[in-house]
Image 1: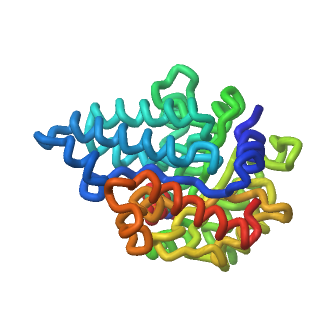
Image 2: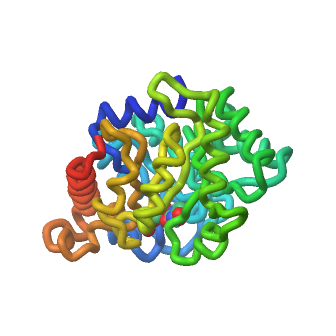
Length: 301
Ligand SMILES: O=c1ccn([C@@H]2O[C@H](COP(=O)(O)O)[C@@H](O)[C@H]2O)c(=O)[nH]1
């Protein structure tokens, strides 16, 4: 079954469009996990990241459709971090969560194939259900990912309009009366056109930031066959009303990522007193349930 169809089913089963971002950061880990690191060695931090992410997965399995590990935080720890990333990806998939690996990879076509095999290939220790991909090397750099998606029933999310304040420098540039982000969206729609599942979704999704609600509305129209991954909710300021335009009629078509706001919820004033470091997993679950409800209200399934 294609990735797009599996995402439809996961959203329907969990009645959630929340994607929990797995972005472990040393300084923010809950005390019981941070204190187990005594010698500040990468392998100790990697073990802490694995435990932290697995316990988050335990807290949210069944109430969200997907998780998004951020590769950068694992890569930062070197080889031990990469082992941890593989363990976290495998554990999430075992717990029936779809994994969107946030690696923002790409290169010339032949190298893109290697990236696709590394993160979507069946024999890979990091085999994920989907991967974020940069579009800036052009169509021939995306096609190798599409081939692997077809072989592996995987998906990709192409960066179309990112959530950061500086993204517009290049993405909002106009050429021939069209913004760069609109041209990327057109490319995504072209590639999806003859690859649609029975729900009308193709394997090529798009990343569009919650911090740009007007562009999100424009891009929803421009990419009717794409799942949209919407980061920027919570810590970056995006709220439920900002992501409303990302959903298609019926509440499908978008999953909304939040990382720091959910996984470090024990530090947020509204959860700190009730849960604190000792009950940090309960804080993750409560914050995730709160996000689910907020998104359901604005039309997410
Ligand atoms: O446009 C983009 C693309 C990716 N991200 C990633 O999503 C999370 C957001 O984390 P928060 O803690 O919820 O801010 C992080 O991994 C980013 O690298 C993004 O924010 N914007």
